[in-house]
Image (cartoon, rainbow, N blue to C red):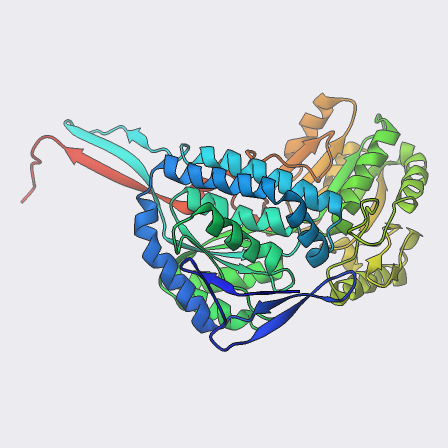
Length: 483
């Protein structure tokens, strides 16, 4: 069992109060690591270091930033198996998903190295003779990144890559449920890659200490951007506080992600897509399918095959390479999922697969006939539970898809791709896939939500979120003044 310090100004440090907290494994319940329980004072040290490092880092060339990201990618490749095993132990991620994260992350770092050359200005036209007018993008300063426990490795790095490529410095506040995978691993890799002190800092905290850490972040004048990957409740709190201090926010939030399946599809292919989208990582990522909306003509055939496939998924120890369904992150998550399933059943829903848990494993669950007043019909439920609902027409399916306040990602399955593209703009989501599952992403694409799923985009499109556009106007002739 390893003990982790926090990381600020290029140095590993004990918490100023000497405290640590236990980081538990979701599957076994054993202590995975002891982690520094940093205080508000520790957060201040990190923010001060980031502010001090900002001017020099902002002045670096694209080539210098790119080189460090390439080095980080090589470290990820070298430590691929080791980091995957850490993810499996600390977050309950199956080995297959944990390994996938490393490959995706290495590729993202390599692509991200090129984004340093995408920070472009523009020449502006002027109505004044002798004027030369340009727009120049300038980094903002210190970015405070709140990182999640789910998909911890790739998502935590996502809150770091764009800001530092744009010339900002970053302080990461990782989830207390995965402080190593969601933050401290970044610090290890950044340190080995040779990032200058203060450019990347990571400050974990014990459960229950988030409020004081947030106080320091919001009251510290050096922080210019709050960058969150997380839930709507947290986002509302952060956005409200950010508004009072005029700090910019970038929010990638959850989703209630539907698949629309039209009656011309290959049913077996639709079943495979629905199974993957619904139960990948035990339903614990923001892109998981929450509702399957299917035309009545093929509903019975689809449901039977979907139930059979769902019941065949192997579950258990996430470190077993055969496991596809691992544990939920903690006991609170299990109870939340279970309560929402029971609430739906009490209001008339039927469980046709799963609906129960064995220890930390919640079995993949399919619900039908779920009324709209059930909590699970309206709120994102982070677990392996999906609703199947039948409709008569594609237009009705779109109305059902747009029912919730969320708008992250959706999918349409049809052999008529023209019909798919016709329906896609009518679905109020940031991402609409035609004949691809809701769990679908490319590093360079503008992933992000609308409505209660947040604002801001990933990839090179996010560079605008972490820079200001500055107008520089130069005159070669003397002005005439009215007085």
